[in-house]
Length: 393
Figure 1: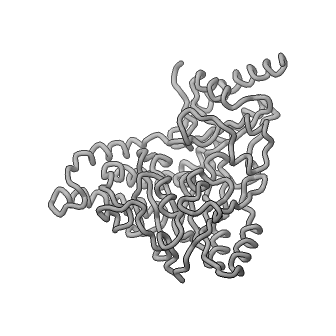
Figure 2: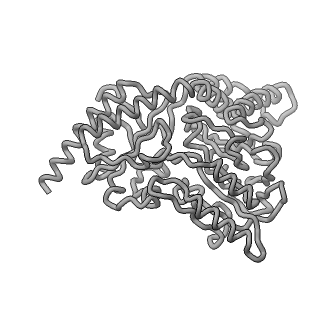
Figure 3: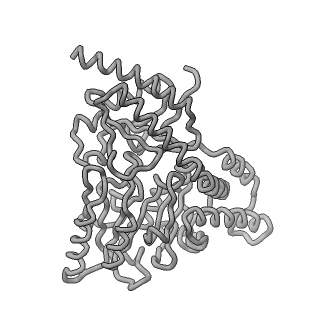
């Protein structure tokens, strides 16, 4: 098969070598970071350095970082009615969740909110939030009798289409109404600049394996003292009593290194990756002029390309690419071996036939010109095979 090309960074980004080295060294730290002896203090110090690195990656403070097992746990920690999660400013009870239609399934599930307390925020044909709808709904809820504060969940960038949401504009609406804003920054961190103060969300969520860290580590970063969070998992009171359970020290150390490297490389990598992505779409369109780029008219992550090709089935194409030595996907990787219609494209109003042809190609720090060359060559063969089947049909 020869050298493979990996264009599925939005599912998981390859572990950065420096992070792998740091993780291997950290495995020799024998102490429990909650222990007061020298071994425990060494583990605690390594974890504190990582906490500072993660905070710096988003312009936050180390004391406001809560390490978790991943973004799913982080979102389930935050998407809960008060008193579990409550605004420290005004301390209103929260009973209703407004969640963007294109969010990850962990947000769409609504955490601990009751089903009748969850509403979906619509998006336009490019997958961007309907700010007018949100403004009107927040005003309606504010004026309602027995008003309780609202939690709003809006991702910074979509992992399928790359569409970047106007989170700062959202925060202006939530601030005005006293709502809590939770921002899923999983797909964005390492691809674009993420600044929690600029976004002005009450909390952001990240996942290490999306920016070159290990799988199984995530984090919540709180925006100052605007939010009070009770632990989802009770026990020993780790993470400043906000998330119990002995911390994954080696994974956390690697996460800190990966975060620092991702931010240091951001300026260089963004331009390089955007050039590769734009070259890719030009070449693919020359082979199939009927190719559709989803969210093409929205601000997008520079590494993400989600395309539809009339007459081509996603599942068949993903397998054909794999056999040709190129790893791509049809959308979010939420369970092993599952290829299904995208709720993101459905929310954008994309036709069923075109949705079923969707392919996501996502680049990253390890992507090379040779990867793009191979992908174009394999696409040419896949497209020709699909066209022959169309003619035969």
